[in-house]
Every structure is written in structure tokens, then in C-alpha cells.
Amino acid sequence: MSNLSTPAVQKEIERRRTFAIISHPDAGKTTLTEKLLYHGGVIHETGEVKGKAGTKAVTSDWMELERQKGISITSSVMTFDYDKLRINLLDTPGHKDFSEDTYRVLMAVESACMLIDVAKGVEDRTKKLYDVCRLRNIPIFTFVNKLDREGKDPLTLIDEIEKTLNMQCYPVTWPLGIGQRFKGIYNRLTKEVTFYDQRREGDEMQTFPFSGPQDPILEKYLDHETLAQVRDELELIENALPPFDVEEFLAGRLSPVTFGSAKQNFGVDTFLKFFTQFAPGPRPRPTKKGDTLDPLSSNFTGFVFKIQANMDRRHRDRIAFVRICSGKFERGMKVNHSRLDRELRLSYSNQFIAADKETVDEAYAGDIVGVSDTGNFAIGDSISSQGKVIFADIPKFAPELFAKLTVRDALKRTKLNQALRHFSEEGAIQLFIDPIVGDQESIVGAIGELQFEVLVHRLQDEYNLEVKLTRLPFSVARWPRDANGVAVSQLKGNFQMFRDMIDQPVLLLNQEWDLNWAQKENPEIVFASSISRAR
Ligand code: G4P
Image (cartoon, rainbow, N blue to C red; front, side, top):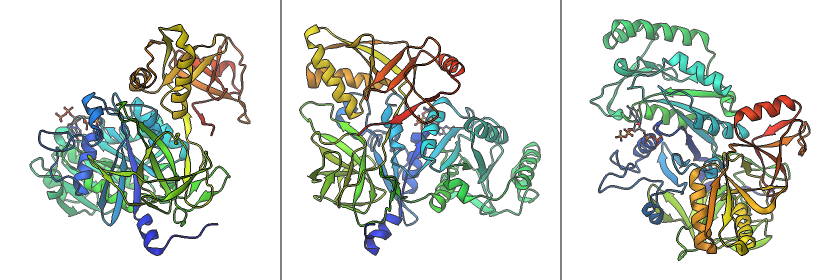
């Protein structure tokens, strides 16, 4: 057992909260992020995150080069202080830059905020990100957004979330009407109502004590029809639901739900207050040995969850994003790189505050630092200041896009295979082999389109290889396992098996329907959508 950090360091660690927002594109993640940064005092005028002329650009696009290319492949970290806490919000690349990195970010947070568009409910991308959170059973807050627009009624929506995600919900706030008739929210924990007025900003709203569904104050603000509906809903939830169970929440089985409008900055502060009250700080992290490491330990430890390769060959350096798991980071410190079993000096490091990349001299468990890397790091690598610590693996997630790569000059086939192996080790793409053709033809898998674009660019830029990428019809990858978790390489039915980079059998299928068929033919087999990455 290692010693504990000094009381001053412990205090810093205990005030860290590290989380991410999971949502489907257009649910309002950028808008909510902006409002959170506004409440955290990082930006002073809303609209900055959107990159209005003359203000800071989109916070996640900090690399100028990438901005010029019109792509953002950086999961940045936005840090702000709120209510004595230091909050790290990790960006989960969405839209076009959705990739395996988006999933890996979720391995570096202690909680997540699931953002749902009230009109759309649980959408496809949200469900996928939620499933990744479930792998570690991290606590999930739910924020139902766009209440100022028409949408599903809140009871139907909560029922949908519970059924689709197989998770209990606990409404912390309740909306008073919706869309045109949206008049405010009731906070069930503080027993207060806040009325919505489009002319006022969120922090100028009026809040009143609330005695319950029959409180006459509702009559002053709600029309007849909304009043009747809201009272019915409130009677139902007040009587039917048990009190908020913090343990169930921390175990990832119950999600507290708040409602609001990110655009109108309404309900965001309520969410933030609730978040600061209940979000867990750095938690003990499981190691490969099977024990856990206390975040308050004096041993500085961390693991790499993302590697940012520079798109410009003149700047070959890469940035390894390290999630600090315990202790204190100091610039220039020497650490043990567990996989290479070598000592390294972490001399160049960045922390990310909004659009700025700032050199960081010290950071604590819960923080993310970007460490300059000349090729020493791979996804999942662990570092520690005392002895050797190896954290549990970051899984590999099933790709959904597949392509075949061919190189014009057939003599360059070996070079291409080498390059692909390198990119696969780095975690930029996944590589699959068709055992019938061997490595004469490589199949690459990705989670987002951009990964392919970056791959083709880097093959040209770093290896001088001009390749042709042909999309394949697969969209599902699964690793078949028996009841003991042992890899299965033969299935009943006419299914062709491929091998992945660590020689595990993997099934590549065109559609979900085929997977259902495979499952029907092989009821005893578990078709895993993620596996441990070998170190
Ligand atoms: P994303 O990052 O999740 O993709 O979503 P983003 O914040 O960019 O929001 C997507 C659209 O939804 C934006 O509209 C945004 O203004 C709108 N939006 C976000 N939150 C709310 C809300 O609470 N209420 C309403 N009514 N709209 C909301 P846009 O038309 O694409 O951009 P803009 O012209 O409004 O900036």
C-alpha cells in the first residue's frame, strides 16, 4: 500500500470532478457546454463557443491546423471552477469527428451527463455512448433539453429512457408545461419553482418556495389546461416515486433527470448545482493485478486514453492525453512507463482551458494533461512515479465502418501492412485479416468516417503511400465468446470468421439482422461488442 498525499494535495484531488456529455448530434451539446463554461466563469458572454466573429472559436477545435482543414479531431478538456470544485468537462467528439476516441474519453471520466432532445428522445448515438458508460457502470445524469420547443410529454419520455436503456430514472426537476406552454421548472429536492421568462437570462429568473402540486402560485403562471396536466403529473411522481437513492445513482443504475433549455440558459444552473452536490470525485481505479489504486495515494499515476497525432508532417510530435488517476503531477517529473519498463521525463505538458492550450506545471488526480510524445505512448499505457502500476485495459470497441485498402504500387504492400499495424497499435484504426486471403488484403475498421480520412492522409504524409480505400458492406463486428469468456472461432451456421490484430476471432456482418441470426443459431455464445486490448 502506498502512502497518502499531503493534506494540501488531497484537498485538491477531492475537489476534482471529471465528466463528459453524451448525446446525439444536434441535441445541444455545444450549447450546453457553452452555458456550463459561462456559469463556470470561463467565458463571459454566451455565443463564444460557437465562434462568433471576434470571440473565441469552438473550444474543441484548438489546433489551428485542424481548423484549417475544417476538421476537429481533438477531444479537448474544458476546465472550470464552480462552487469550490474544479470541473473537467471532456469533449466527446460528435458529428463528423465521431470516432473510437469518443468512446475512449468515457474511460477517463467519473460520470456522464446524457443530453436528450425532448422532441427526439433516446437517439441512436446516445444509446451507443450510454452502452459504453455501462461497461464501467459510471453514474449518469440526464438533462432533457429544448423544453422551449414542442416535444414528448415528460412522463412518456421518462418511460422511453427507462425502457430503451434499461435504467431507472429519478426526476429531480419537473417541467411546468412544454413548448409554447413551457412556464418553468419545479425542483423536487429544494422544493422551489423557477418561472421561465424568455426575456430574462437564466441567472435572473425568479424562484419561489413551493408547497406541492396544489400550491396556488401555479395558478398565477399556468393556463387552465397546463395547470391541470402539471398537477396530475406532479401528484403522480410525488406519490409513486421513492426518494432519490444516491447509492443506486453512484452504481450507475439510476439516473437523476433535470429539464431545461440550454439555449435559453434555463435549468442549466439547477443541473450544475445538482451535479456539484452528487457527482463523484476521482475514484479508486482498478489495476491489472485485480486491486485498485487510491486516488489520494502519493504515487503519481495515470493512463493514456487518447493520442493526438499532428496532421502536419513538419510537426511530427504527438500529444498523449493522460488521465491522472492518483497523486500530483509536476512538470518535468520522471515516471515509469510500465509497458516499456523505462523511465521517462514528462517535460512538456499542456492543460486545456477553453480554446487555450496552456502549459501546466502541476495537476492532480482527476485532471487531464497532454504530454508531448515522440512515439513512446500507446492507448492504454500506464505511468507512475513510484514502482510499476498497470491499470486495467481500455477496451477496443466494435467498429461500424469497414474498408479495404489497396496500394497502387504492389511492391509497397509490405510497407502498407507495416504502417497499418502501426496505426492499429496507436488506436487510430482497427485492423482485420481475412484468413483466406491473409495479409494480401487488409481490412480496416473505424467508428467514424473521419478516422478513414485521417488514415489516408497519414499514409500519404508519413509513409508516402498512395492508397485506394474501398468501402465494404459490413457494419457490425462482434467477438464471439463462450460462457467462460473464451474466444470461439467456429460458429454454427454459415458465418465467415475474420481475425483481429491480436489474432482473436471476430465476426464481421452486414447488418444487425445478421447478428440476430447468428445469435439464434448459437444461443450459448456471447457476441461481445468490445474486448480488452492486449498490452
Ligand atoms: P450539438 O453540439 O449537440 O450538435 O448541438 P448544438 O449545441 O450545436 O445545437 C444544435 C441546434 O439546437 C442549434 O440550432 C442550437 O441553437 C439548438 N438548441 C440547443 N439547445 C436548444 C434549446 O434548449 N432550445 C432550442 N430551441 N434550441 C436549442 P441551430 O439552428 O443549428 O443553430 P443556431 O442558429 O441556433 O445557433
